[in-house]
Structure formats: C-alpha cells, structure tokens
Length: 404
Image (cartoon, rainbow, N blue to C red; front, side):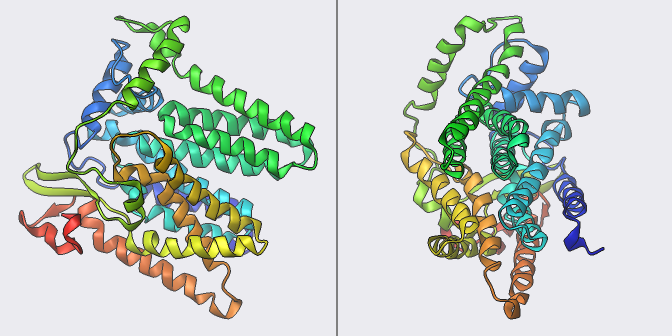
C-alpha cells in the first residue's frame, strides 16, 4: 500500500522527523535566551509552588516548562524540552488541518514540511517562551474543530469537547488565543447553519469547555507557599492581568508594527554572544521561500475560495484573521514573534495554493519544497545557535540592513 493511502503512518513519520529536527543541539545556547529570562524563573517558582511570578500571562506555559525542568533538570534541555513537543504538535496539527480540508496526503505532508521549515516554528520550538505553546494549542484546537464539523452527529460531542479543551489551553498560555475560541464557535455555527439549534448545541458547549479549561490551569496556583491565589480571587487576577498587558511600554530596539511582519522587515536577535567558548547567534527570522511565497498562496487561496473552494477560503481567512487580531489588539509595542501563528497559516496556505495546480504542473510543489528546505539549510547556522567564525560572521546572512 502506498504512503498516500496511509495518512496515519505519514503523520507518525512526520512527527518523528519534526521532533528530531527540533531536538538536535537543543542545549545551545546553554544559558537563558531572550525572554527565557522571564519564563524560566517563573517556571521554577511554579515547580516549587513558591510564589506568583510573571502574572502578566496565564500559567499554563510556565507549568509546562516546569514539567520539562522536573523531567530533565534545571538546564537548557529541561527548559526547552516541552517546547520541542509543542513544535512537533504544531506541525502535526497543520498536517491534520490540511487532511481535513482537502483529503490529500500529498498536500498535507507538503504543508507540514512548510510549517516545520518556516523557521519561526523551529526557533520557538527550541526556546522556553510562550508562543510555541500558543501555536500548538491553537492549531490543535482548530484541527479538532474541523474534525468535529466533519463528524457524523453521534460523534461530534467528544470532538467538540477536545476542541474546547485545546482552545481553552491556548488562552491559558496567552490571551492572544481568545479570538480563536470565538472564531471556532462561529465556524461551527456557519458549518451547521441549516440546523441552528444543533449548531448552538455544539458552539455553546465548546465555548464553555474552553472557559473551564482556561480556569482549570490556575488550580496549582492555589497551593503557592506565598500569596496563593483563591477561586474567589481569580476574577480580580484577570483584571490585573489585563492592566499589565495593556500598559504603555517604553520603546524597544526590536519593536515593529503588525503590517511589517509578513514582509519580515524587523526580525529579532534572540541571542548573539559567546557561549561555551564560541560565538553563537539565534535570529528569529522566517524562511523567505515559505513566508513570502506563502503570501502569494494566501492570495491564490482567497481567489479560489471566492470561486467556491471552501477549504482554500478557510486557509485564506485564517491568515487574514490572524493578522487582523494584531491590528485591533491594544498593544503599545509589537514584535515579530507575534506573527508566529500567522506564519503557520501562511505555510498552510502555500501548500493549499500549490494543490490548485493542474496535474501536469504538480512537479512545481516538489520544486518549491526543495527551495524551502535549501533556504532553511542556508539560514540554519543563525537560527540554531551553531558556532560562528567571528563577530562579523552574521553579515553573511543579512539581506537587508533592517535585519541587523
């Protein structure tokens, strides 16, 4: 039997490959990198049930980082181990979404490859930050929502519950996931618009389950040795979190506006300094083939969607929605890593667009995949913390002055 007829086996092979890709040399750099200085200490406090820390964001990501520390030690591997699993889960969720939308193993595998080598997923899978976990839970929740929508009536309840739990977990990582809960509920209503009562019977429970999953992640914080949370104090805590997230911040050298993220105008140096006797760099920069080519893919998917191809319309609208969120959110500063979910959706849209090609041109998707892998390999030294030859070595990869 061909691999094209065995999607579960293909998904397993993709998971193994992605996990290996994200795990190789996970311990470099060996010290705290970029915003790990916030989240790793918070995870340590969580592991010890000591006191509240990093209360600007909900607790789930810090709880997961703490699990990694408990399993592998308080070191670079322990800090980042769970993030690698989140990266693999994101790749698999992309595969699942495309399988559910198009039923094509070829298209789904191509999309999974684009997600894995879009570079931002790779980098966030190797650092103890929030966005990698956000991407895993949101994409997983959206895949579960599509799975529920396509299920026969008797099998929808469990899938709806799964979608609610995953989307609620996404919000428990970062509030930026909250709009996707609303989007998923609206998607269920639209998909079952001919039976509005049944649609409400799915959308409302999914939203309620998401809310319950969100608040459940706060339970460990009730056991802090100092200043523990209480069930009654959770609402007040949400207000303090909102105030922290909407405060006016000072200018930052890596800040950027939402409209610039698709163009990759201002990437972020997560690390560029000596480590273990050699110079290492980690630049949060997308793969030009996937990120820029995917913009054409979004346009093609939108056009195909307008002409009646529902799966393509879903991909285009997901990317547009993900960018519109940041245009609307009242943040005083923006950073390129906010584009993480959009980078996943643009990768999936690229694969969806290539599926539109006629059979005689299907070789093109293989050529684009090869170009994406070559670009990933080209940038690998400065996205993976590999040893660099000298302090000016980074210029080798700087296509534009704004990348420096």
